Length: 366
Image 1 (cartoon, rainbow, N blue to C red):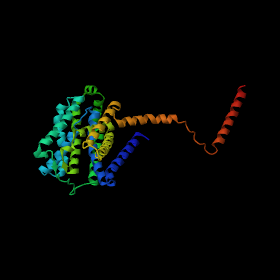
Image 2 (cartoon, helix red, strand yellow):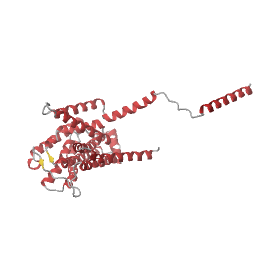
Image 3 (cartoon, rainbow, N blue to C red):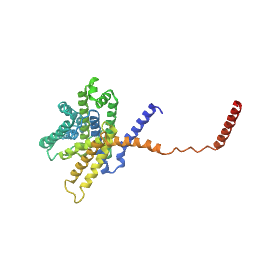
Image 4 (tube, rainbow, N blue to C red):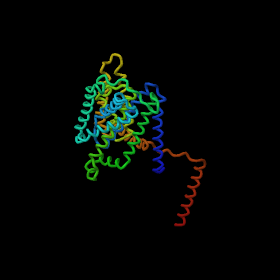
């Protein structure tokens, strides 16, 4: 099977998985549909953050801030200025990307943990603005009664809304894969391998990093807008600092620079966070138990991955599987195929013929 056939088979498999993800909500219960919708929103954020961390080498704890900004852009403009809801959803990623471009120019001069702390500070600043700008954001009470999303004269909800969210996840993943395979993606891979060599080759490292930072923020803004029209209510309590940490843990699970790993990490961590919330709200548990359990668990996962699986947990498991399978195959003794009917007799006759031929040769030589 040549490379072209394998490529088309891979594309067909990806298309089938994408269709399955979109139609799956109709097989879920109503509570599961809500959780599945949240997984899709987080997957969009994780895809952008995976590109940022994997190719630009920038650890950002500010994706929760951009997620919050996109949510409030859609909600505030729809409620205060009575824009069409679909227009506000379309505006959310572009407005978030514009803010990311403004703060990214000075912010990306920092590196390593300095950048991580700076992006965490951005989340804190955005939270303080939401709490204090009461006339616009509603302050601590939040925005109540955000209008429903109108699409084609209807208001999608439940399974239909979840399908729309996962359709946008598929589109986001395809755009990201196309970016990685493009000329810009080759430049990004060069930056990921060595910024010094990439700069020496004429690649504008700073410009590419800024563009990727803006793109990842735009993805988060889109997911935030989708969150607004899922619940029709916004509160700053829905965007805690641990949310930004949670997004980074998703990448630690799925692997940096991996689009598929980002989706896998978003699904796994969202499901884990849901189970921790159920555990923390059991009778007898303290009021802060869900938050404490989430922070402790995510911190432990992040510490283990940083210490032992720098490329991510999923890539490490894939590499381990690739090493184990050949060893298992080599450990098994080769099994001879069963002879076909009459094959043993023909082999014996052929051996006796060769034996007579060798004896005649030796007599002639003698």
